[in-house]
Length: 134
Ligand code: CO
Image (spheres, helix red, strand yellow):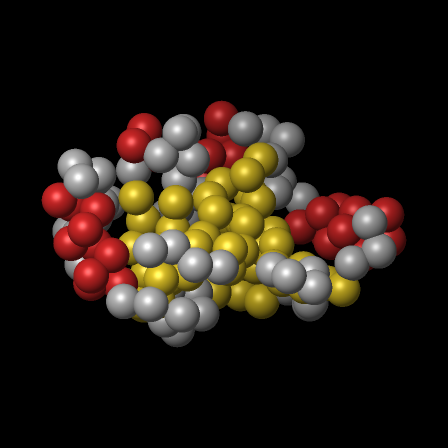
């Protein structure tokens, strides 16, 4: 059911330092910071030949990654995102398998303007999983 790895999202306490690390130390192609107020984050996209890394930093009062950074002060992998062809079919299959879909269980429009769902980390090897309809 899952297809390509769309991105790995890494929450970082210092966006400039993280951009410098990926650009200068790792030699990757790094985008300028992009504020996404609707998602409570500022994002830098790191383009790799086969996938993307998203460096996330909290934006605004109720950022969904603020709590994560309080627990992981040096930053850390926040979630991984797999592509699916049909998000509703994926949701129904996962629910039938007993997996917990976060929120009200309905897909929301994600950071790439495509429908996404998040799955409970305790059901997926301790990893927050995002599904995105590609
Ligand atoms: Co994501």
